[in-house]
Length: 313
Image (cartoon, rainbow, N blue to C red; front, side, top):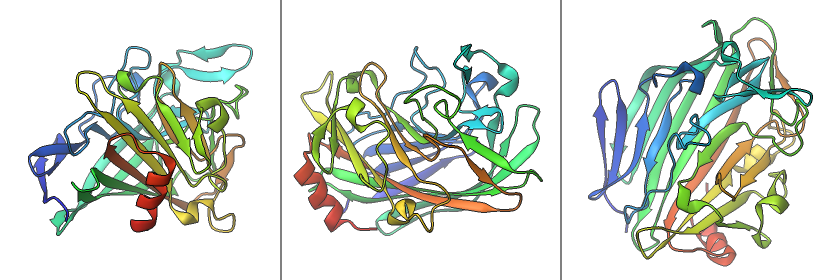
């Protein structure tokens, strides 16, 4: 049985989704005040069915980390990630506000709670720092499978991005700019402080962030992150899952790799340009589909595999 899902639209601010009496997700589309943090919509707070928080917001080490958000750390010389920009190995990270762009919410074309799912469809525009329109995005979020017996629910996040700039867009990361094993970009999750030092899981079993960092999606279509919580006697697990076509070398615009950190800055990103840049021609588009499973309890690999087999795409 699934828990009933309800949706509340706080106009001009956010969309809140609740499973029963627990608000499990808030999708904020109101522009944040500081342009240096790269204004863009994000999901925070995100909670388990038991009400335990699983996202961090503006941590003091990276103020531009905000829950779950779409990012582009290196886009044709601009930064749609936020914060300092990695320029090259000689100078490293620098505060360059004139490189920081944004993702503008334009409108919602769908918002409804139908049966056991909530559907959000949104149009956005990607802008460089001066405000020039570089790309149009069609984004969908589907919140579904809120199952108390499983202690879990799922978020499907889809992006379709079209180049409207009139010249090619180049997607990269700090690693493509010269920093080893720092290929963060794309859909990104930041965990709260008590996720620091959590357990990374892969289809091969328990792992570490160092061993998992840079793993191709073709080799690990999912990874999970489990942690023991502060304040409550409980664990939480998040499972990050690529849709099958993301790892299809014939269909995806570029191979995806995992970006994972489990130390003081618990983060996972579905990186679409970890080791190499890719180009999007004028007028061309690309798409990716992702899933984030939010669960109560400390899942292991067998539990995760069983859940994914019984909850296919």
